[in-house]
Length: 179
Image 1 (cartoon, one colour):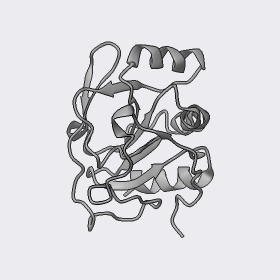
Image 2 (image 1 turned 60 degrees about the vertical axis):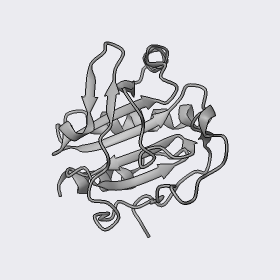
Image 3 (image 1 turned 90 degrees about the vertical axis):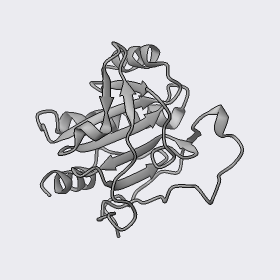
């Protein structure tokens, strides 16, 4: 059994442009374990993100860090439900320089989503995509969480809401950090 074995199946569609149903041929593989994924993909495609102040973060520049990326929207109830557990996970790793958390508003409303996060008292950095989001990152549902290892290789992909505040998740992230 994988380290990420408890996945809730509550999810929203990721956007109006993706309402046609899944394209099985191009759909990314869904995994719920943090096992070695080098056989599936050496590296994820690059992704550029922008925060409310215009600062751009490029995934390829974050090698050497574990990267936790959550794709969400304020309109999505499952996204809002899992947010406190992501905040708890980030608080656990707050002083660890080997992990970075990126909350990506799929609607591109970074100012509104940043305000939402702040009003809820969460300490989560909010971004929007600064270009296209490759299907390896975001399929048909939000929330979708992608965790990349220090080499930029897919370690976990979770579609739907999940409780990230568990000891199992903390242990799995610690294994990636210490790898």
